[in-house]
Image (cartoon, rainbow, N blue to C red; front, side, top):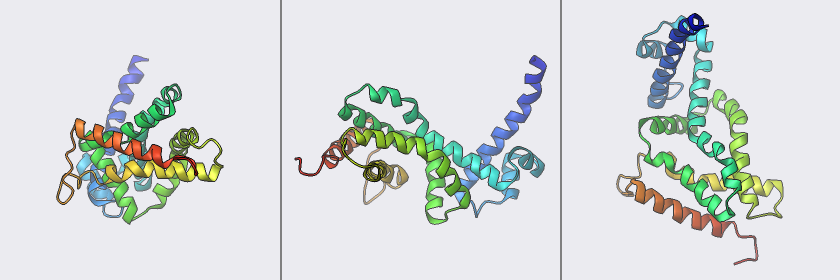
Length: 214
């Protein structure tokens, strides 16, 4: 058993090195602008290793996207039960705060968002396919949260409200690198992000009031 573990470890290290190299290159140049040759050079492997682990460029990009998506959502999903035990206002505040956590992150979060920004301007079939698989649990969590504010809403309304809720945070996270620059000049330290989360939370709660209520 120990020998088997020792034998698989170099392969796992190679796989992780390829993913990290590809993540950096896809963040810099997007899917179309990143060649297998560049990935091979940066990861210091041969192309056969990429074919072995990922079955080519599409498979590798899919794994990079999966890691990026989960890096931005898994913390929320891990605390889903915790949200259920809170009041709806407290749960929403926690949800918004965790959504904005990447604003305090460093290189990894930045690379993830740059990859998603490339998808905005140059969408790929790989991304569309992956989102169909990976987004459902996270969107469902957001829909469950807004349902606590809109208990009589139909499924279409809840889905749209969930997308709207996510958008209130993602517009800041997507533009993280530009926020501290003019003309915005937003400080991105812990107190500033706490303030931003509380402010967005208040606005979201007001926006989720059923029609006819003040």
